[in-house]
Image (cartoon, rainbow, N blue to C red; front, side, top):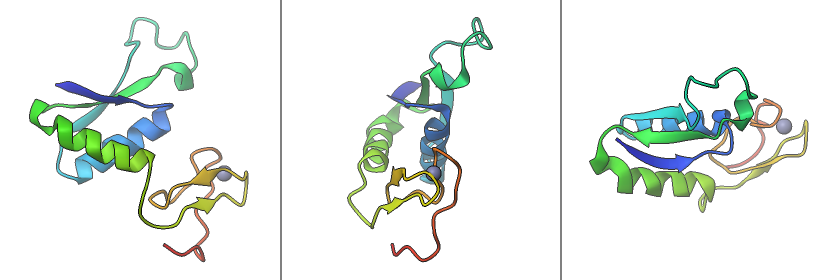
Length: 106
Ligand SMILES: [Zn+2]
């Protein structure tokens, strides 16, 4: 098992893990601080990390996460609700949960 990347928050970690699983890799999200202090700090400060269960998937997984972090394809969009900028691959605002406008191309 190898760590792919530390995510800025649990929502993004879950998005990355879902994307890796969708690409055929077995990925899980683990917090850097495991159960010992869980509940004592806010969930968004636990620095969740995405791991691949198969070490051989690591290069591919890192490449995919890199693409998710810095999308080069498609058109990004701005959340109408809170103004947060998003890459083209995201269908929902991670800041406020608002859905991407249907009229946005890409
Ligand atoms: Zn938003």
